[in-house]
Amino acid sequence: MKRNAAIEARVAALRQAPLNAWIALSDDETKLVAQGTTYQDVVNALDAMGDDSAVILRTPPNWLPLSV
Image (cartoon, rainbow, N blue to C red; front, top):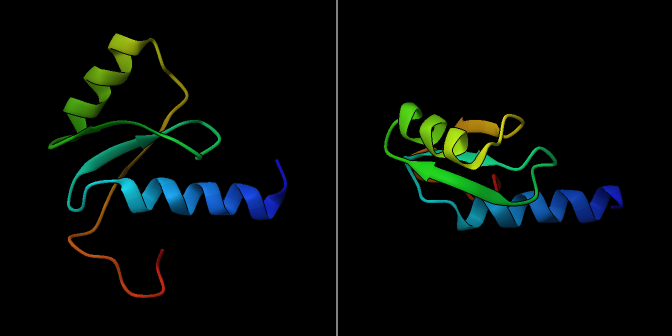
């Protein structure tokens, strides 16, 4: 995947993610693979999927206009 395409895929994944939530992105950061209210919710979902390489992060309550 080209760098620009990877960046666009990451931005698209973040745009579809719920705000003010814990999320997990695929290891290449192009797909939303899990989401939850708590960090543990996301970890449990990833464990159930057998995914040990996802990137876990918390989304903000709202995005700044230039963030995504």
